[in-house]
Image (cartoon, rainbow, N blue to C red; front, side):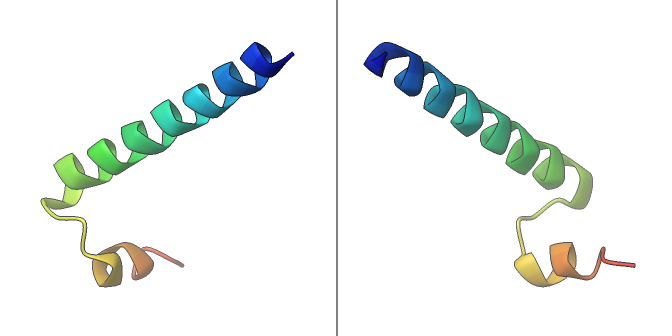
Length: 40
């Protein structure tokens, strides 16, 4: 059971890092002001 929890947490971290890398490649920085301006 504990291994399942660790596996789920690791997959969430992988998705989060993937999103950060995607934002960095698209905008050239991880400036939160730029990212927050994406809201409608």
